[in-house]
Length: 339
Image (cartoon, rainbow, N blue to C red; front, side, top):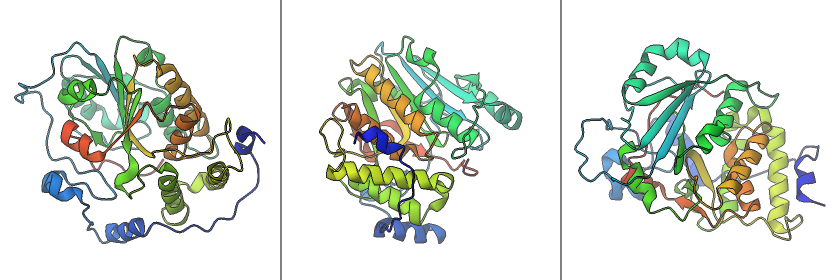
């Protein structure tokens, strides 16, 4: 049986899956408003701490008036974009990074966001961000319109972003902050990569075994953090069943078992638009978005389509420590709900 037929099989798989003790431990601690610190604490210091559940909180404004003597002066051009659709994020006026020369930054926002956050959006504009109005697309019975619109921007952005003169396209969630002044230096050493994604392995160690990470996260969301997949639970169960069969070889793709080397967190994505495999990355992202109409969590999906299109080797699974130290990667608390 071909693997793609299995994706649409009907029926429900009864699952009894164990949740990672580390994730369960973290969930209890989160309710108690304290957190366990990982090995990264000593390496990063208290201000930029990474635990096993969250990126570090933002503590520094990446403003326009800093001393940037070591800023990269190459001619590489980069486009950066983020979005706020349906009021999923509370628009922030602090921790808005200033946009340097050589970088074009875009904020996509819908009518709901403009009505609620118009004055705050002006702050982004003053710091060099281009504001682009974006209309919501209809949702499905499994995924809401605002959430699906955000997925469309993440994986299938407007063609002018993909076909312009930029060398790299950087996307990040609305609650993620990057120091844009350090972007060009960061990607300079990654030109041989078609794609750079955050390695999910800071949650739990599964080095070289992306399937183990997938099983850890999907099991957690099916049994503990059920709100993440509530409206698409049956489809998640069928997807999990399919990948389990492909992992052990009961189903294959081109004779290959599903053995992904890495698993990724998709709150920040770096696409090398000039790479020889940029077209294949676009195809994999388009397939991911199509499946996002049935399943709420894109992290369950993207590693599979990258593996299917043989992009795993050209994809860098970047450790979170590197993003924090080299790019000032951090998170702000702007989420107001799940859409």
